Length: 233
Image 1 (spheres, one colour):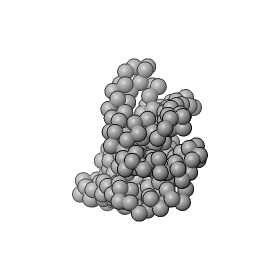
Image 2 (cartoon, one colour; image 1 turned 30 degrees about the vertical axis):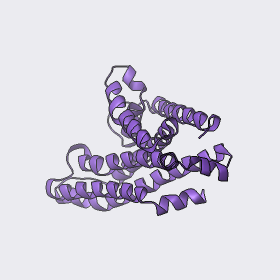
Image 3 (cartoon, one colour; image 1 turned 60 degrees about the vertical axis):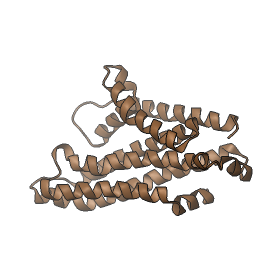
Image 4 (cartoon, helix red, strand yellow; image 1 turned 90 degrees about the vertical axis):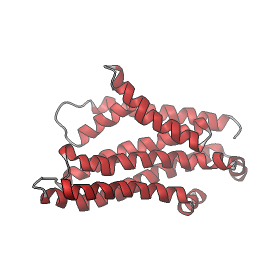
């Protein structure tokens, strides 16, 4: 785990990814200063939720895919031949990175958006942002794990990022629009959990959504883990 943490701190991709998420937040804050936070907290969704979800998935892919991209996975497994332990360290770091990034972004959002909303005669309680942050933590941990899974399945950093983003934001979005079938996608489950945590009107099948999301994460990570543990790097 120590080596993974050093890699995360020393190499540029995590810093650029975090900077991209913070830049997205800064842009949303700047626009909100002039135009307000928008309907349904649009500024929060575009400035905090979207950038951190993309960043979490990229970090998940990168933490595993870097060695495949550089051709150094065999060296890693020579130093630590217990593949399950290598995988656990990488998965744990990906989840931790997603949590830290989400907390930092939402801490800034909580400091900025309520006062901006007040300046535009709009009420945005800190408690609402805390609930949104809790929902973002759930979804971003799931997205980071899915990123790890696609890196393991593709054995490629670039390929893993591409497939993960297409899966999350294209395929899932399209399938979610299909009646009944769409209720069983990871994206629909994330939305259902978000709506429940942020106390949106209506009935929310939180238990079903949670089980569906866990099934997607466990299924994809399990497939990736099986490929990683049972085959040569």
